[in-house]
Length: 106
Image (cartoon, rainbow, N blue to C red; front, top):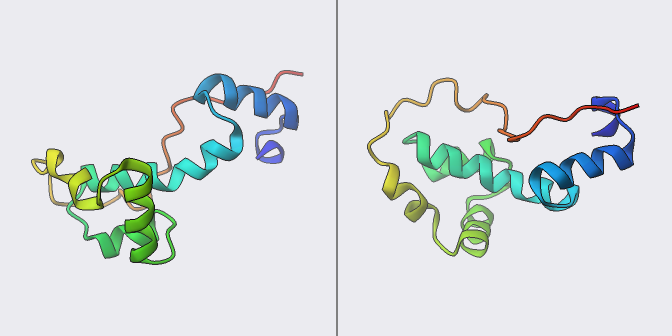
């Protein structure tokens, strides 16, 4: 990540820690479930369609990870958002929302 952002490793670590409140490894670990949650909330894609799109190898892994991290099965994460448009065009290629910008300080 540091090479891609043209930042020093320590500076990148500090930026992520400040912006996300997490160590970079923790932030990276949480990104697949964040992507999956976005797809659950914003689309009517099936769990089988969301699984590979959010970086999980199998639907079983996704369901277990979802229960472990959120305390709920994937379908329960979707229920409050069922009023959304059923089309998912463009969302599968959507970049993950990092909620912060990385800048390099030299």
